[in-house]
Image (cartoon, rainbow, N blue to C red; front, side, top):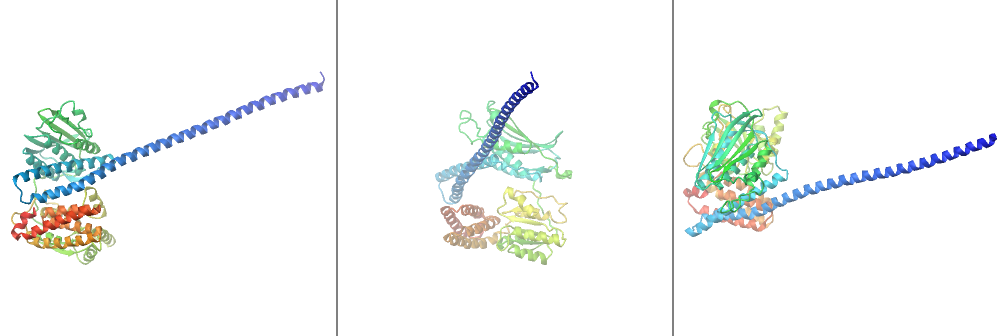
Length: 554
């Protein structure tokens, strides 16, 4: 074979090999392209799946919120007319009724209160499930909490015709850190449940201080001598809507939310709740909560679960800020037996001006006022103190509308503490005593509406003026309603609710509270009905002699 043929043959072989490589490369490119498409599809499917998961999560959250919102809205809508029914029932109870009518009215009011408790439970449970539950860790005094619980337990037991006992371990440190409001709510729910299922005998609350490896905790045990809980029901007793069946009770006594709420609150506070019960022998609910000790205490102040009234104040010069002068006169009368000088300001702007002019030991500040609110006045006073390097002046809020969740907001603004109207003389003195030089040596008073001295109420002579002012404000509300000025109705109702409460006119205070809520919802007919009820009640009160006003007020 010639050289030419040999080269030609090699060239052909090379061309075939190149062709093969080209085809192989083409196949690889096609495979790569297909793989890229598959990867794109996988990425697309992954994104689609993730999007679907996000959508499902959002829809689930929306459904949960919608359910909770629905429950809350429905509860509010039911509560509004129910409040009117109960309010009118109270008014009707003060009229002349025969024995049959009184029996009917008593049944009506009892059933109304029962329904109101159920609605409150539904509202609370819907808040918990919607994620609105927040646990606070703040210093509180266990003695004060137990005094309030004792008052509630005694009241519930007396109404049922049974006994209530409170036992507390001696020498227990009383200054603690935790969420006292939620602890009180849990204990109230358990006591209410104990009373509900106990027809004779005793309910009790015992408190023991535990100090284990996990740190200081408190063991609360609520016991009763009631019907008990069957063994097969006990594992589900803390489930929502769990209740004893018809064969266990002659009648059902609730919808089964109280224990479910208590269980969730205890868990949220890092504690445990357990049950020990036997049919026919009663039940015991044991709540173990981590409640650290806040500070060292004197041994003699650790155990006495009693009210320690403040009987002495050092000389003080205070400023009282309230847009209703009669509220100022309440404070003046409460402090009449003490060496306390009171100045008056009708709004926040005037308060700031007087603060610049005089040296005060404390300020009592209403929150909602015309011209300038109490909160804005506090902000300005705190700015002045900071700029001029002044010692912070104690400022105590006075308000008829301080909800549990709001008190921390008020202290964040600059208030030192909150007095909720109507407050008693003892509560006012207790608050002021904390800001005198003797505060560290005095025992702080606790809530419970305890009075300092017996005898005639110093506010009684002022009640005719209060009723006269109330009549004028009712006419102001009537005029505002004709103009559909619900904002004005809300402002007047809020102010009069606090004023009536301060003077012990509890029915009027309650009705003004209902009127305010009704106006906030722009419920024309309900608002007018409540207004007429207020007009009638004030007219009846003004008909009686001065000596009878105190009895009618309650």
